[in-house]
Each structure stands twice: as structure tokens, then as C-alpha cells.
Length: 481
Ligand SMILES: *Cc1c(COP(=O)(O)O)cnc(C)c1O
Image (cartoon, rainbow, N blue to C red; front, top):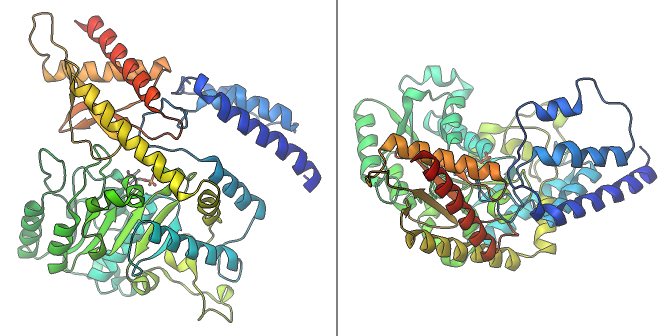
């Protein structure tokens, strides 16, 4: 493809994207695709050479119906994933520049814009200059990197000798049972072993990690000859957006020399709002913090910030220095390859740079405050409606609900029947295309998360979503009873 051919096809693609985003509210929110449907639509044989028009037509025919539309105004699933168009432009610029991000020398602009961007985000979040950051693909990767740092600190850099096998006593990791699955995954990948991961009790009302239980778990492990290596504080748990008490966790972990990683993948965006920062009290005492601009802030996937307070330790754990990656200025520059796992990286800072320069942080903040108001409004509606409960405190923009109808005999449904009812109405709602929600388990029982935060979601959309939720639940209840 020549640059001139690219120009013509590119204009057609940009037009297609703008049209798609415009008509998105008229499409079903959840994908109605059946398993295997997309594969059979694209065919088993490699495709023939084709023009851009035919390819764009297939985006409409095959791809769009195969997507759950997270930018839809009635998308209330997992977490906000807005892919703001300003950041899409940055992503496009990244692709068009085609920079080879392997060392400072291969792309000084990529390295230095990423450093600058991480520092701007630090300032916008009200974090002290002690934090240094880099952009990773996801919070899962960030958690693994933090976990490896913790492992090496607790083992006095055992990786340079015989690794964990030579440590002689178990290194232990602590997190809330409400922590994201990526925390357990990172602990397993970092070699700690599931036997050495402790899921510490949470407060039964707030679902935040209990400091007293953490203290007890650490003391018991130390008495048993273990070496506590890391505590993960979830600032915004996945299920209910509960905030673990970071200050108390830091204080306890520090006494045992354990690394504290704050996983704020979703809720870290709330640091942009000064009035929400109290939820993160104690953060400055942690060792690492990750959060995803690609969630509520609206930057397009993938964009996850990982900040550490001791970059020299991180670099010591991550760095390699083969001859072919050296340059004369190595002493003066940052080598982002030594800040994480991959060598090559995309020019991700452009996404944030474009978003901050086109939308501006005040627009992002205003949108997030609107979402907080809408969540409070919804919680009030739910609480005021007979047969409905809000099952966990609403901290930010996620409202966890349950519909608890009574049976024909006027008695409450038993737990199994209620679980079946919850899953049935949520599935029916998602299949209707009217709105999209995420059923999840809390305390072993099913509930439904309504996560508000698509850029297009106004209060009227939340009201329409709540009406669709009630309709689905009423229909499921009358079918079951
Ligand atoms: C979404 C989420 C993750 C995982 O994020 P990825 O970037 O998809 O890996 C981890 N932790 C929390 C608290 C999350 O909300």
C-alpha cells in the first residue's frame, strides 16, 4: 500500500468509525453472536485480496454484531471502556508513526513522552514527586511486575542465585478475597505458589480488607517461619469497588518488611477528583500503584500506569543489557525496557497526550462527576423500590443490586431459587439488547453489578437502563413463580 492509497482508504475508515460511533445508540448493547458465528462468517480459508469498501462492509456485517458495545449509552457491564475518540487519534498516530520502541535510541520521543506523560498523570492525581511511572499494557502485567519486585526484595535478589528454590522458607502474599483474579495469577506466575497466597478476611459490611485480620495472618506466618513478601491493597475491588484501608495496610506491612502494591486498576481514575482522594489515604506509603486510564478515564485500551517509589529496585529486577541494545548515552537516559517485561513497546503515551490536549482533564473530571451523581441517583431509586436491594456500599459509579421477589406462598425465595432468578433476569436483559449488566457473586450469592461510566451515558440512559432491569426481573419472576 502506498501513502496515497493509504490516504484514500484511511479517510474511508475514519468516516466509517465516525458513522459507527454516531449510530451506536441504535444498536443492541450486548453482542447477540452465538459461539462460532463470527468464525463461520469470515470463512475457513485465508481471505482474498479486497478493496477497503468490501472490508468496511464486513466490519458492519461480521464485526460489529460480534461486539458488546462498551461505548453504548446503556452499557453497564464490567467497567467503563470508552475508547474516547481523542485517544483513538493518538492510537492511530502511534500506528502511523510505527516507532520501534525498544531502547531510548530507537525512539527518544517515545521514551521521553512516556516519562513526561506518566509525570503529568502523577500531578493530575495529586501524587508526590516520589513516584516514577511507566505505561504497561494492563493492570495484570503491572501486578506481575510489582509481584516480581516484591519477591526479589524479600529474597535479597535470589534471582541472581538459585531463585525461590534457594530461599529456604516460604515467601507469602496477602490480598483480599475481593481482589481481582489478576492478583492471584500474578502470584502464581511469580512463583509464590497458591499455598503461600493468603486471602485475608474482609469487613462484612464494606467488603474492605480487615487490618486486624491482616495483622493476625502476618503474625501467624512469621511465627511459622514464613517471610511476608507482599500485601496487595485493592483500591476499588472488582466486585463492589470496596476500598481496602491503605494507611493501615502500609503500617502493618512495613513492620514486616512486606511490599505494598495498590491495585487501583478501575478506581484509580478517581484520583483525578480531589474530593475522592481521601479514599486512597496512606497511598504515599505504598511501594507501587497501578491504575488503568483505559477504564473510567476513557483512554483506549491498552494503557495501564504502574508507579513505583524505588525505580532503581525495579530496574535491578527487570534489566538486561545485551551488547546489541547498548548506546553511548545509556547513562543519561531512561530505558523503558528495564521497567517491565517486554522489550518492544507501542507509543502508548500518544493516546493520553492526545486525550489531554483534545478533551482536557476538566472534561474528563466533569464526566466522572456526572457518573458519580448518576450512580447515587440509581442507588436511591433501587432502595426506594419494593423487592430491590443495594447489596454493597456505593463508593463510586458501580451499584450492586439484587431483586428479591417473594414466591407464590408469599415467602422469600430460598438462596438457590434466588440465585437462579438473578442469573435468569440478568441473562434475559443482556440478550434483549436494551442494556448490558454483569452478574457476579458476592458472599457466594449472585447479584448484579450496574457499572455506570460510558461517556454517552446521561441520567436518562440510567433511567432507561433501570426500567429495562425492572422489566427483565419482573418477567423472570412471573415465569418462575
Ligand atoms: C480491571 C481490573 C484489573 C485487571 O485489569 P487489566 O488491565 O485488564 O489487566 C485488575 N484489578 C482491578 C481492581 C480491576 O478493576
